[in-house]
Length: 150
Image 1 (cartoon, rainbow, N blue to C red):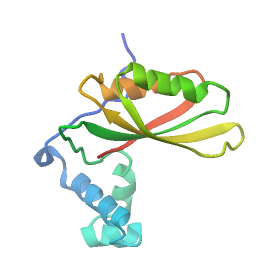
Image 2 (cartoon, rainbow, N blue to C red):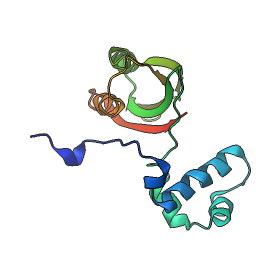
Image 3 (cartoon, rainbow, N blue to C red):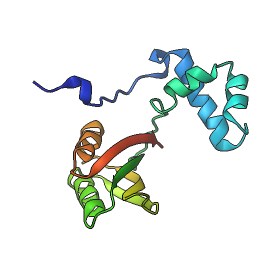
Image 4 (tube, helix red, strand yellow):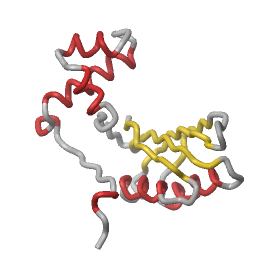
């Protein structure tokens, strides 16, 4: 039996099913990202939200947008700085039927590279949650996180 505690699951909910506090977190993130508010403190104050609630949920909720052309997701990953490691990650994404739009890799620190990817999810792409989990199980990949969808 699969260890469910270690497997990430992703859900798509209608806005009316999402608790108000989480919707406020999404809006506070938009205020910060758009520059309408200069800080987390200002954004949560404007939304009537506590900072602790913002930090509790900020990495776990994002808005999902769909279009006829497909959906774009953003991932970040940390991996060993070894030849072929990034290539393996990109190969697995391609095998899942997704298309890489952008890649950004920071300079490695202490042998660990951090990458950010924008990925176009196509009609032929399999389950996104499974893809993220699979990337996290590649040897030498330490952390993979789904950041947001556009």
